[in-house]
Length: 487
Image: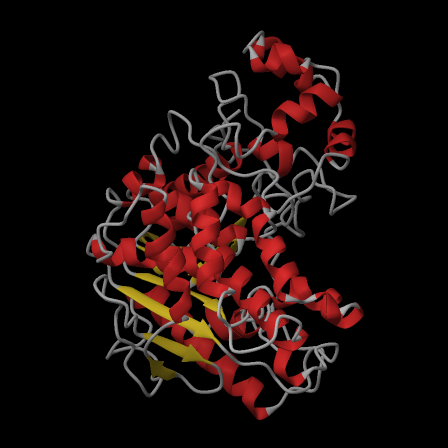
């Protein structure tokens, strides 16, 4: 069921966070979970009319919550000043179960985010916020959700800017158009005794199937869900007739023009490969890297899966200037391939669509890793900046190693850039917090792709992750969906 409007009434205990939405990750999670958090400077009145930063958490659409730490007050809220809003949204089966019919159309979790944004429009002025100055942002699945909000007709007018960190609706195997790419609901319903494979495939009694699923306890649903085959996007958005009624390529051409701050960390996938690097480095050979790609769930995203796979292997693995068993080189190739397939390429593809339709796009790569960080990354050639690494420098969450001057400089720079963007729709405006450089906007045409490398210093650069252009133009073109901005 999609989110329903709920206006404030009565008394709410706001001295602590509400429970996270039902999920395996949190034993204290509950189904009663759809709450909003508002963080303001002190002594706010409705006359303040401060810009608002709405934050959407990540967690692969199967976990997470809207709880934020106190560090954001010094680096964002008081630096602005501005207001931060976060929310909980349903995850896993509770947020993304779908029969692809009106009985359970899917995308309930995205509807939660949209309703939270509508709540902000109605009520943020009472907290000192300006509903006409809302920036929506997130990281990982939170960024993907923000991207989906921008693509949904129901998102129009709910924001004036977007911050997309390491996530896009165009992410590999994220958006599902048919049971071919995701049939998790069917598997769950069968294991819970609500249908048979034959009945489900023939479209029998979806209404009764949904009623049966609704009768099950949340704990039972999560327990059975935990036994299902696992892959990176087990539960996620689908095409429906309401929230996401067309293919993403079509919806991307209809978006409102707003400034967009978008990017990735340098080595998104390194964290997922680290255990294998530590315990079985010799696994990384040409053959295993090729098999890893060919068998990946992500490749099911493409209608012409075999053709895209063949072209990808030609791009990333053929005619390399190192031996087929050079494990260091093949580990590096695997990290780059999956980083670009899952995160970097989709983010750049989204950024190009925004630029093509007239939005100002500010592209970044977060490239800083303190030498004392992540000691398990003990092979110099394979030390990388992992997924989510920038968050500690934006929300000022602190570090697990002694803070250095470079850490402090990075936190200061990220706070200024993100605050400027929320306040002005530009990370380096002439009248904003001083950063010492001017951030160029991304051009939709060509592949020079100007961006800013972020760390203790900001470095204006060109050729953003150049091989990622395969996922921006080559793969979509092979699949029959050539973007208008590609030559």
